[in-house]
Image (cartoon, rainbow, N blue to C red; front, side, top):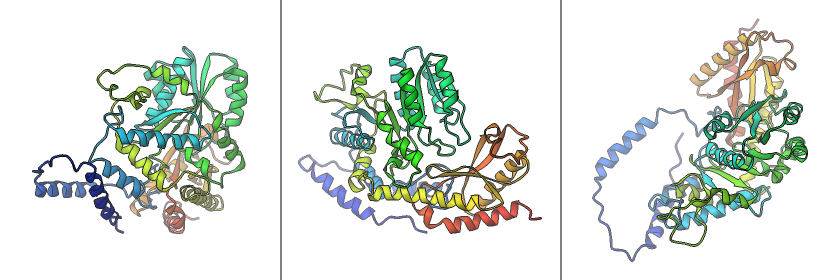
Length: 452
């Protein structure tokens, strides 16, 4: 296959338009050695061959998705200016674009008023949310499900905040009964609801958590780093749809445009429902916040220097592909969801496999059938390795066997964890290539499971 490059012609045209805005400045003579630049860049291209094909639908493993061409082009174009969105004098245009882009994300969740900004990724977005929680609920514990991202525990360690994990139900979602008992014991100040777990894409039952908030008054943060954008699609299950419709009621949301938002890496977002939390960020920087009486993004962010290029790319993508139900952007997400449902049905109806949970988004987890969990793990590892040699790149995921005892009663649990196979079908093209993906998986599975 060929990597897309025709769009570079548009970039050249855009560079000429950009430089026209600075035509009254004296020229700067460039003395770069173009031949040396060429040699090094070709060396880079050679080194970059040593990668899995993350951009291709045959890469169905980790959460890797290529940026949209408009994001790629806008990001590159901005690098001729290289704005810094910490203060307005370092990124005047790109700061305005960031505010517009973040407002569009907040509006996607039903928030007309908000406080938010872009950041380096989901980890930083969640850190800021929990930092605010720590200030508003000082001395109180933060809880998240056992299947929530590991970064929450680590963030709490960094911030010196108490943390507890809540066990999950059979669908890898926070167990509400256990959460209620933990809340009865007191001192829980913040509950993190995961909207798309990293392992299975499971959605914590937000409506039930909101009912508990009415009783216990805790702060509620939604980690929607992976699943946030799925609020736009029309093929969610009714319970999952109900959860997304409740997102407007949470206190803060983390979302990663560099996952389903079609952006290059280095683009996360944190938004707060109450703009008043901005006072908790208050600080002074006499050498950066002097050029404007307007809000500098650095005044509501823990990070200092941040790439304006990320904001430019996001703004351009949202301009081309508005985030509205029924639009082109939403249709791409819905197609990925449809790919996951179709893949799950194939697994469910194949006696060689056992599904782990029914997908709520676009992540599918399953295992090759065996009578012992240790044998399942061994076969999963073998399928993973052989499939990679056939250009089908899956992922593995270690899941606690205790959570599977009720649904896998025919399996002897002789290990604490079982290695599962996992696919993130997050590219719309996955749906178009599903038959060929299944054909490779079928051949590889037959080579691992000896037919009797």
